[in-house]
Length: 444
Image (tube, rainbow, N blue to C red; front, side, top):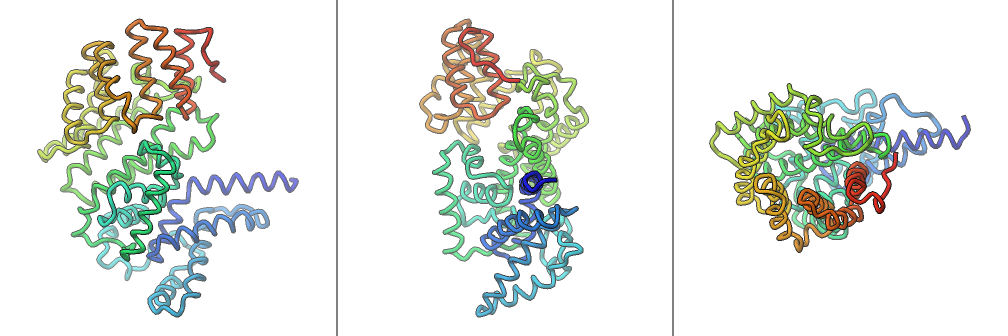
């Protein structure tokens, strides 16, 4: 094999390891050092080292373990250079005991488990660090954004998209959050059990956004979009972590409701893209591909959450998902009940996105023209300025109302904004159906 081919293989291996292992490596190092900034810098160094070393020695059998060991050694070296600070010397000694090539990803020593509520519940480093980063001293949006950016491998652009804000705005939020951590001396350590509930809202929000990022990838053509398969794995990670949170907080109905919501949505993943790589709407999905065992589990989890008689936003959203999953056909969906639930959700968590979803339900109950009135009220919302689903929804309602020329203009506007290939192909197909001469051709 020539050097160019070898370099290409190593580059691909490092890129794959970044998507698959970044969060676990960072979480393990941050747990060992108690310093998120140091952990992030040393994890980055480990990946840079991998590019050099793997080219010479080959890709290791366990890339994640190799990266964890290397990142911890970089951290150990840095801590040793800070010997003038007594606390750093002590941290260095503790870290030295943990650096073991034979098992870099193994649970830490029993002494570190004292007063750690996660040890019995899960022993999961990533979940432990999610709770650590969701410190109540930070604004909710700041702690959620920082956790996503630092621990999940999502880029600043991806986090910004999840919050419907420009990338520059999100970058500023992240900088402010890190400055606040430094200025207030927030310690990145496991919170005591009696403080977990103060961080629950942030943790649940992190898992919801993490799932959404992964679930959206199931509407992408996996063979054509770089990193799509790895991004899909984020949805499974979010479900796994939500299970651990539900176990950790058995008396918190919103934790069970979030798990129910994620399971009910994840059950539809196989139907979200067709063989042609075009995203499938709920109306078009082959419901025989929905995973009935997961739907049954989600419905049972929702029943448990409802039994607490403390409905919150995730309970309402899970109830909406349950109505979709329980309907044998799209036409049989109980849209009036869904509309009522969106009315409730809008009072709990008012947002343009909730209003947009409510407009869909309104259109299904009262017709596309009524839905258009509700959508048009959102056209000026700054949060939706670059959101392709706003013109896409207007286009769909205009198409259903028989206003083809106006619909075509909205489909073109949505195509200018969309950044996901599966959705782009769906919009192009819709445009071709009503305006075949001017439609953008759909590749593949």
